[in-house]
Image 1: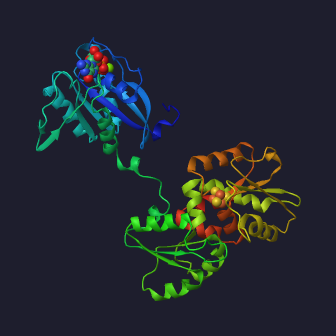
Image 2: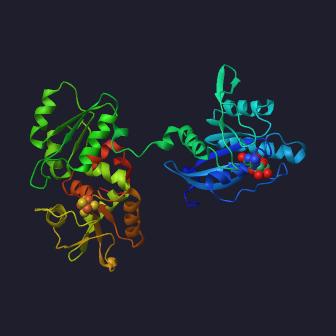
Image 3: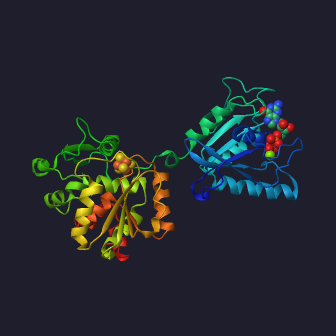
Length: 410
Ligand SMILES: Nc1nc2c(ncn2[C@@H]2O[C@H](COP(=O)(O)OP(=O)(O)O)[C@@H](O)[C@H]2O)c(=O)[nH]1
Ligand code: SF4
Ligand SMILES: [Mg+2]
């Protein structure tokens, strides 16, 4: 169980139905926890009870075990109100039928949920006692609704119910984070600039380049891949302007010169700084480059030991460019591995690698570790764009440029 995710990012799933239909039992069956109160006496669940659960691949969800909508009496009315309130704010409703099956009561509930435009699933619980007929469907207006046989008691179709919930979830809950897809539209031309130099692996592209190209294709956009020398020919050869140019950071300066200012330009590293980390934070970290003094220590943080090539970015290029840019006598230290050095406090800036081997959570944790120590942190790509004087330009496609300029990040 994960109770830590902020409420806002949890999918809210409400189980609604008649008292005693087995809503609490179903939540227990799904979550495998004996937490919801199960009772033979109708109406035990007086208030909606929340249960947190990690429903993969959706992530953290909250189940609400609502009181039945059929409650009578004053207390019953309050319960009905509470149930409606939950239905208003839930993302998926599971309507649970009990031994009585589909009656006017369930029909009313279904109509309410449909009126509120809440995606819903109809489940026939206690199917161990009396299952819903194989082809039994229910007619609401001109729509035919089928029903899933489940049994909270012996676990029948509980996994199918989980899958139905996942399938019914609003698409944004299922969407993975995008690398570039939100910056382009169907049919757009996107030019990717990939230098083939000594640092490029033999016979293949590197993973971030492949991922960007794949996402361009997934968006039904057109991905054109060129080396930096060919960029001008490509721009002249097409009668349509690209919607975006994505370049390797190492040639960003020359590409920025070749690509007219009105064409949006960014770098693979900037895309990945956003995808894997916290772009505004890494940009603010880069602003600390301007504050560096003689004798300051800069940590080049590599998340793994794979990054070791001739004329290496972290070991050679960034130190050279940063020394030239600041005119300061700086000490650079490279640290590879999953941790940071123990005496982190002596560093004035951390320049982190592109984190290709890390997932977002890990990268965010490393950024947070620097933050707790009050050490500004940036990454290779953002630092390079800053040192080459093109940072505002490569941030423009994200609409961040202005807000960061206000905070003095450039
Ligand atoms: N036979 C059978 N009994 C069930 C099933 N699910 C729940 N029950 C029983 O039905 C009663 C009411 O269950 P409960 O979960 O408290 O219902 P709620 O009021 O909808 O939350 C309890 O006695 C449960 O043991 C089931 O799938 N099969
Ligand atoms: S995780 Fe960092 S150090 Fe390792 S290969 Fe990727 S960019 Fe290089
Ligand atoms: Mg209950």
